[in-house]
Image (cartoon, rainbow, N blue to C red):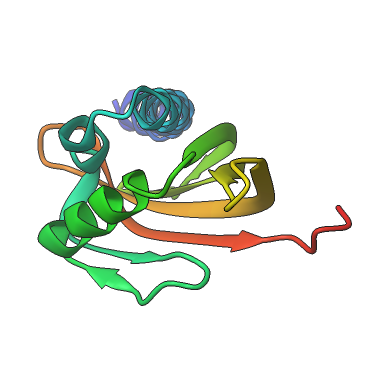
Length: 155
């Protein structure tokens, strides 16, 4: 009887560990999919759809701009950027990492921002981003922190 109990306990521990690994893998894929959907929303330009990927208390750090704290401030920042002549962001999702607990994750990728200058010639800036995500009670992911930078123009 003790041997049977011990074997069941060992099986549960290893089976549980395998399940958590499986959940982390599926969480990572879901997070990367969410990041890609956000990139598509950015390309599409619908402000409300873009903003829907941020958490209510999110913080955004973009180069050359004051930080935006909270969804209302982020919405205004997005609206302001979208009014820049020739503004066109292109985001390429790279990889996603999820914590062992499965409640936090981050994504890494690249960004290219095109804007028009006074002569209406496009100018491109290339950079990188980090999105820090929180898993919501309903299983969805919301971006809590976004940080972007620009590489030197020689890149």
